[in-house]
Amino acid sequence: DITVGVGNTGIRSGLIGEIGCSWPLHDNERKVLRAAAAAQQKTGACLSVHPGRNRKAPFEVIDILEQSGADLSRVIICHIDARVRDHEGRTQLLQKGCVLEYDLWGWEGHFPTYWTADDYMDLPNDTQRIHEIRRHIEEGYGNQIFMSHDICAKTRRVRYGGWGYAHILNYVAPMMRQRGINQEQIDTIIIGNPRRLLTFV
Image (cartoon, rainbow, N blue to C red):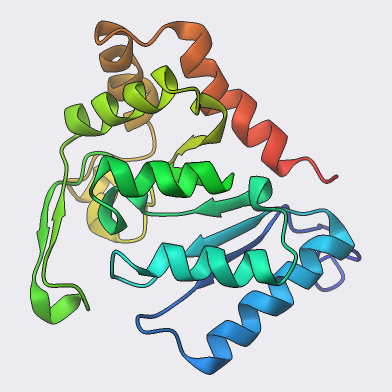
């Protein structure tokens, strides 16, 4: 899909992923992560990973990828606003060099225990996400932050009562400016970082 194209279309995939992982990880998922690291080394594509629903999951994923020779600066950990809910944990991941994706904008509340392997999974609201991102920027990690919508269900589209695909541009970016994040910093996150990660190396 990356080197030749999808089917006969000639359209090449822009990244490897989203690589879905469970908690606890299955042996086949470990094998897939190792294969993804090898494919990254061969193609120069970035990796996008959906960690299992537990705080420990992103750390295990990063450890496996690092041991397999992946370039962690080109690894995106998705759903970070749900998986690792403390600043210290997120900072530990950033110190490894990976990219953290805040992608549940507009979605707040909690996941019940029957749906997650963790004890509970509270989601922050958008203002809390913004304050956390501002803190990352202040600590020098602005180049390692992604923002996305994760429109994964009909109910997240405007037509069905959700915030839709324009929520970040229409609502979140103005809120970021109001809370002390300047336009250059916003552009780094929503333009520069995706451009860098989607460019093959």
